Structures are given as C-alpha cells and as structure tokens.
Image 1 (cartoon, helix red, strand yellow):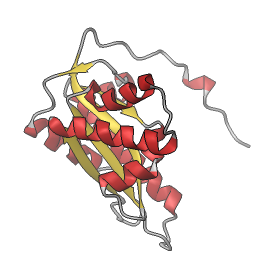
Image 2 (cartoon, rainbow, N blue to C red):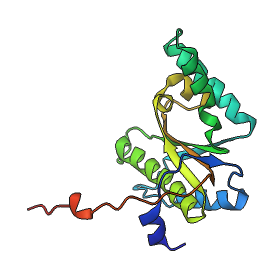
Image 3 (tube, rainbow, N blue to C red):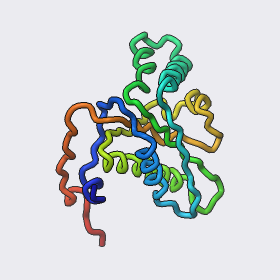
Length: 185
C-alpha cells in the first residue's frame, strides 16, 4: 500500500475478529511505531501485547478497577468492563515512559508515544488489518496501571485493538483541509 493511501484512508474499525496479526505483521506494526518523532532520542514508549487468555485476565483487572472506584457498580457495568478486552483478538497497550527533568518536556514525550501508537494504526491499515485506539477511564486508572506493572513514570497512552476486519471496511470521511487551516500574520 502506498504511504499516502494509508495516511489519507485509515479509519478506526471497532468490529474486529480472529485472526490476530501474525508474527510478521506484528514486526511491521512495531517497526512503524519505532519511527515516531522522538526529539532527544528518548524512545519514550513501550508496548504490552494482550491476547488469548490474557484478555480475560485484563477484563478482570478492569472489573477490579471499576469496583475499586464504585463498589456498588451495576452488574451491567461489571459485565461491560469484563468484556472490553474481548472485542479484538489482540490488544496493544501503548505506554509512555516519561523522563522527568529532561530537556524534552514530558508533554512532548507523551506526544511522541502517541505518534508511536499512530504508527501502529497506520501500519495495521497498510497491511489490511483492522484497528481502533481506545482510552476511557481504564487508561488513567491507578488499579489498571498497577496491574499492568507500570512504573511511577509510566502512563497508558491507549489500548490499540487489532484484528481482522469484520464486515465491510468503512470509508474515511471526506474532510476539507480549508476548514482546519488558516494563515497566521
């Protein structure tokens, strides 16, 4: 796939099924992530893959986080939290590793990790895979962070859900650049 095609036509796809990306496809996904802009060459990111039975384990971690915040959470919310990681055969947890006190500010390090996540999404699209970037309450929850083994200086940037596209791939909306670009001065 041409690079411009991937950049212009990538869309988030929530309906994902088996099979998950294979080893060769994953190699491409992570190689693309490692090309993210990285002022200072800090490599302020790391990734966790979650698949198979680990998805159920992550669902239980999500339930623990929900119940820690709200012990009286309705059963529907518990069921939803438990099922979240089951929406795709592979999840990639994108983690920013922030270096405090560096000349590159932490917000820029977060942006770099976000660009790494976007690289995974673009590479998934280029390989015909489906993907969606999800955050939500679980991305900032301390119970989830602890359960994932995050260090004090690490933050979840997002959960990337990856798999084969279920149904038709939707088209990217046709947005007009002029609606978002203006001259200064």
